[in-house]
Image 1 (tube, rainbow, N blue to C red):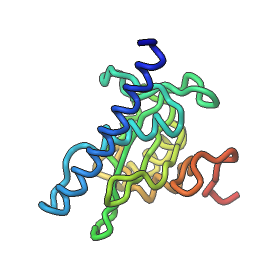
Image 2: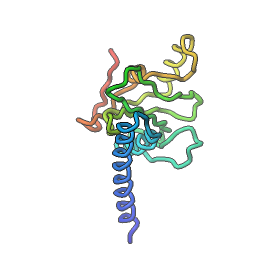
Image 3: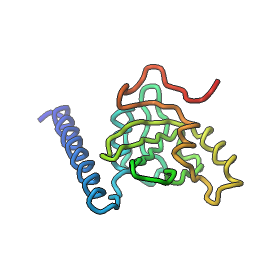
Length: 173
């Protein structure tokens, strides 16, 4: 078996496993009201696939992937959040440590079925500025809402349009 054919089999197998994981996580939440802790791995998989990133296996580096193409050599931290229709709270993303071990953060938002809906990307400068501006009012440094991330980030992928050649900018000029 050639290396290319093995890579295609592995990618197909992972695609299938991720599909099953999404289905299982959604059914589990419907049955129990609780969530399975799989969002992070699904987010890593989806972002790497859709934005052509190279995932890293060493989770102690402080970032999840290395960029290719127009993100060449950027260290990317990946965050994921499922937005449940029945949720009444303002969803938050996990704490982002401004420790210099990443260049950009990509946030992927999922629907109730753990399918990706949108991906936003923000630079370290934008995130650190937002964290510093909020530091006086927040108890937890690095805590950020999904809404705040969407304001400072750029929409880089949607279910409907995929990766746009011209990145959408949601910031007023």
